[in-house]
Image 1: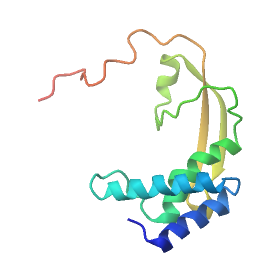
Image 2 (image 1 turned 30 degrees about the vertical axis):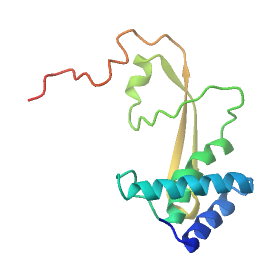
Image 3 (image 1 turned 90 degrees about the vertical axis):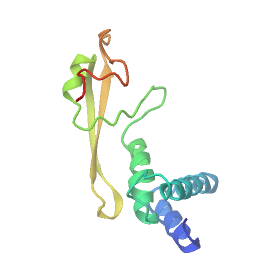
Image 4 (image 1 turned 30 degrees about the horizontal axis):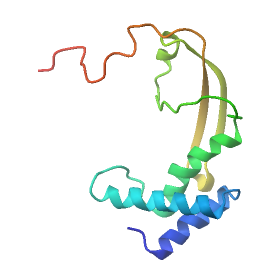
Length: 137
């Protein structure tokens, strides 16, 4: 659980990078972050638990997308596929835009890849969750 100094560090980091957040939203994000860190002590949810790093890599990283893409009126999903690009064509998608940006305080760079759905997904995808293709040992 974060102490008052750690909570203040989290809020200060948010304010420095996303100053447009209202006090209410910052409070909600703090409650969420503190809850994740608290639960992390029982269930390993994340290795990122320091307030400044949590703010940047979990919150600001997500919010920075809004500075690069107009999502108004669009349906979006973060699929987090990593290197799953070869599957895009098979699943009926094509890359429509790529935006790159840097996280604050030298915490890395990101690329946002927008995929436009252009064709029906074949009925064989996605396969039934939890069903392995091969019989395990």
